[in-house]
Image (cartoon, rainbow, N blue to C red):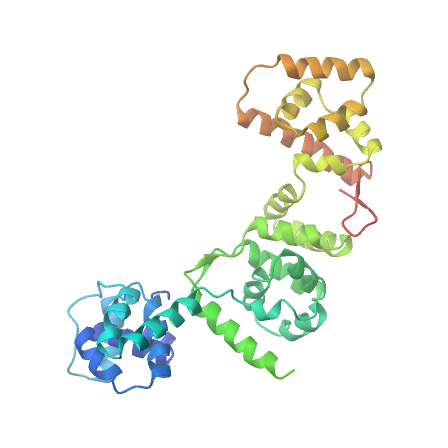
Length: 338
């Protein structure tokens, strides 16, 4: 759970969990003994996420319960350890262990797992009215293949906004993920863990790699117009040096005309044997023999130099892409520009 700046932003169970943590184990034990097992489980789950509470927040919470009780400082014990120490004094050992096991299971469950078997069109129609940030969180948890299918079913302008938000996502409070997950699960019935890395440029690139060409090109065009730097980062992640394996021979020959031999030699130093074979196949016998000798005679090279050479070649490939001179077997089974 994140550290809220104000108790106004918390719901009832969250406030109660923080208040119990502020009161200490002995006072909390007396209160929890009056609650049902289900209520204890709910409060315990919230408490286990708390890493610490600012003094002003705990004071504000406790003021709601009583105007007489105040704490002198912040809370030093993490909520997870607090609840593990507290429960054995509140209930029988077997019950305490069962509650703790359920808490651990709940914290480590896969978010939005119940969405993965839903038809992409149905799911897209169901979530398209949500806030774009909420949709971004949901799509980021679906897996690249399912995420690309759902994304393709959303309106184009919304697609752009969603991938932009995914690219800028870092960590999301687990209680927020859990809340969204539970609400969706309940609503769909009628028809976690710590904050985790769920977004970023790599996620966008992988999703677009699984999109059909029309959807991918449309989204990249939106990105280019709104944030050219972000679009370039996504493009680089979508088309890496080893992807030249999928370029047809005509495209490889066009590429070889535009790059220097020194660059190609450096770039192929870490290339796979398959990619080297493809390059050699599209050179004359003499040129292929000379290139192979140059690679064999090359001494140690900095990885940064190899990667720079590969990026330079990919820059030429992207230029040829715009000119329509470089083709790649499409992800949807047809031919598409790279």
